[in-house]
Length: 410
Image 1: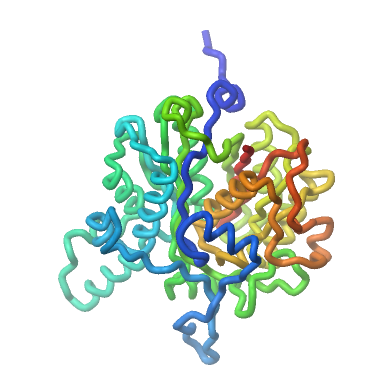
Image 2 (image 1 turned 90 degrees about the vertical axis):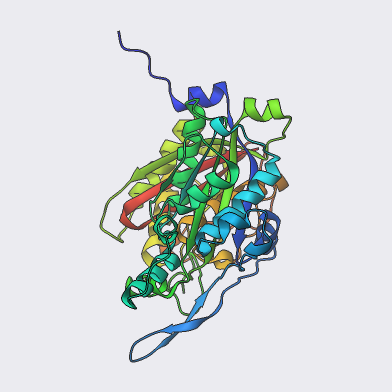
């Protein structure tokens, strides 16, 4: 006899998954409050980078750099000192999230999942430079150059011994990490999980590769607007503490938000292409709503992927028009943070949670009529959530066709 298959909605109804801590290192500074303030002040943070791409006509590049971590003074400095920026940012963001949650984890019931598009690229290229110079590599470079480094560093700092690994789904990596962590809790494999993303898109190699792909702007990131011409890269990390509601209740912790549903999928159209009607995003939205057993009409705010590239914004707009009879207001936050690759979905999840906490659909950094190929979209202008629209939806899309959607409520 085949056992009945439990749906995700059934599992979540039995013991919902809640967010109890958040941490972020971004161009806005350290912590969720700094990120929220930058968004509500509508303060683009791009600045000229200290390098140009080689070629007959060198280009001055813009980026949104995260502040350096003063790791020598950090409580987890012993772990940080052998790592590169992306792993240090992940550790710092995780420390913030665990502190906010006041989490003193049971090691065997706590796990860590981080996502990254490029991993510890500075440490990897440092090792390559030593090799090319015929110099010895340091013993710690073996583990420090793996994609597992951010996760491993956090598990060591926390003594977390539950389900832990790293994921990579290009720019959707952080959302994939959140969903994977939530699934471990829903399956009963953990009481608490630290999940998020980290990336250093401002390394010259990463920036040059994005330029070669034709997706960089050399003026401004202007998602969904008529004059949009590309993205601005950024750097940083963001982490959440996820718990079962029963775990948070036992600890006497008040949840910040509830993760109501999610979806992860692939829509392969090519290495860097996206279906013109946003097929992957449409399916991700519908699957996330189905996992939460909620209608599209319950969504009151969308944290758009909104890169500012011509093709991606048009496809996302098409997906939103197909998924919602009248798309709810949206926020496109990448003019504030830059595109931090695998960390960006978690930054946008934090902004979704802050929006719910403040009962404010914050003004999108850029306003004005959208482009003809993004028609019917409405930028958020700073109004409360309607009582019948309590959900915030965060979307992510990526190279190779990876897509994710996360649904949050109070």
